[in-house]
Length: 124
Image 1 (cartoon, rainbow, N blue to C red):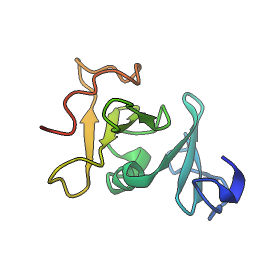
Image 2 (image 1 turned 90 degrees about the horizontal axis):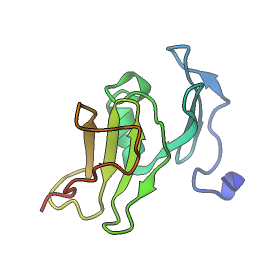
Image 3 (image 1 turned 90 degrees about the vertical axis):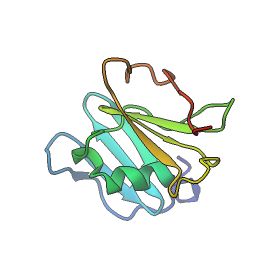
């Protein structure tokens, strides 16, 4: 992550065990590194990180991250997969105030495949 000159900046906490006793996290100026025994370590930052924190972070409906951010080279959308779905961010999200959309996993969505179903986000 290139230390303090990297995208996360300076650390703002030591590594801490999270309240559910499953994961651990270290916070930085511009994001968080979250670790779980099943998914390993993943960064959560930027607009997706803001939304994830607003939704309750690991205690929210999407749970822990299982991938880092993935950029779709065709649309410039960014997607990050979590245990219970994914967040997608597009700088071209039209009238959306945040530009971030949560996609909850259901019987038609595979969170195991990080590139599965980008759909028509942002809406046309």
